[in-house]
Amino acid sequence: MPGHHPTRSRRAAERKGDVRERAILDTCEALLAHKGYDAMTVGDIAQGAGITRGALYFYYGSKQEVVTALVARTVEHLWERSKATAEADEPRRAIAAAMQRTVELWNEHGLVMRTAIDLSLTVPEIGELWNHTADLFIAAITAVLERAGIQAGTAPDQAPAMARALCWMIERTFYHASQESREKLQEASATCEHIWLTSAGLIT
Amino acid sequence: MPGHHPTRSRRAAERKGDVRERAILDTCEALLAHKGYDAMTVGDIAQGAGITRGALYFYYGSKQEVVTALVARTVEHLWERSKATAEADEPRRAIAAAMQRTVELWNEHGLVMRTAIDLSLTVPEIGELWNHTADLFIAAITAVLERAGIQAGTAPDQAPAMARALCWMIERTFYHASQESREKLQEASATCEHIWLTSAGLIT
DNA sequence: ATAAAACTCGACACTGTGTAGACTTCTTGC
DNA sequence: GCAAGAAGTCTACACAGTGTCGAGTTTTAT
Image (cartoon, rainbow over all chains, first blue to last red):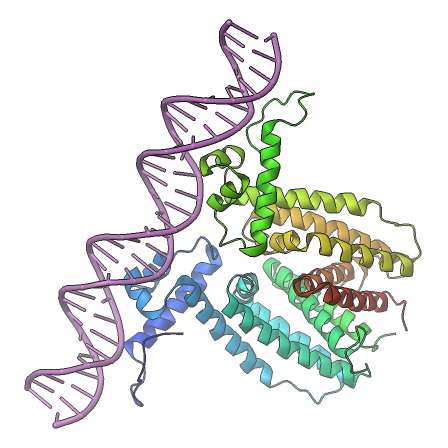
């Protein structure tokens, strides 16, 4: 998204602009925390990053672009973190592990994730980013369900459709719980895990 | 929310202002459909309702107030519609009925409901309206779960917590599906119903 | 018929956005 | 070590949308 770096030479580690870019994103994240997206102006971001509005527009073309970059940075971290999924595990264990990892992700990045969800509709690029992320999770859930004996297929009571619904359940439940406290998040996780297990036929 | 009607006499059926108010809300709903909340300006709304911006501010203090009123109108309709719930029915039948009714609600009011959800965070009044609505649904789901034999209590695998998660699952799944098509909505409904039944222990 | 209310309008001040152009500071090839 | 150009920074401006004000017009009740 940073628009103006046509040729970045091979050894110029840490240009001044890279530091600024990071400062902008960090400031944006901080502001998001106590002002919220709407209240936060690009002037605020610039000031927080120690530059003027004009200078900020050198790096990002708009407020939306800044936030999009922030979401992209975070989401990238999510993927990184989730790549190491113990896919080949026994279903019950896989589910527990997945839920635990998700709790950690929301504890660390809840704020940005909530913002991403909120802006999915209005900022198409963020929507795409978030949908892609959701699809990864849905695929993972589908895999576990199938390994637990749920039929693969496109009917509403078969693995992919159920995985989609379960994914949205987790997203939404965590979205709300992460606004409250870490304890609520942990409880919410237990509830979601229970429903997931039941749906997979792993609890009578 | 219409701020300036200190005394409305008892028989004055259909003041001019009432008609305007309705026109404003209708226009707002229409604009929401093809422009979206952000793109829609209060000038647009006023123009659509056949008055000037200045006149609109006589009825509503801001764009947010207009949309809040629209959401309130719709949500009131939801409650109306849901009061007639066949609470005393056999669980399986109650679940099927509830899901069918929910599909109808989303078919009719999907747009406003989606907007309400999107604005829940940024507009506290809408958030409250929507949370209250959700609580009604959660209570209804809890009742069904308990009648199906799920323990009442506050633990993560007991009725209220599960009802909450199921409610968010339905909300989110319908939110996405209603953006696509009526067919998707129907399928999504089937999936949610299946998970609900399973969680209630009504499907092996 | 008249006074109060309900209602309407155009003009204004303010805030935030995004752009233009001039200026300074780094980098790099020679 | 020194030009040339890329990278970075700034002030000033034009513009769009919001919300307010005060002066008017219409409706309603008496």
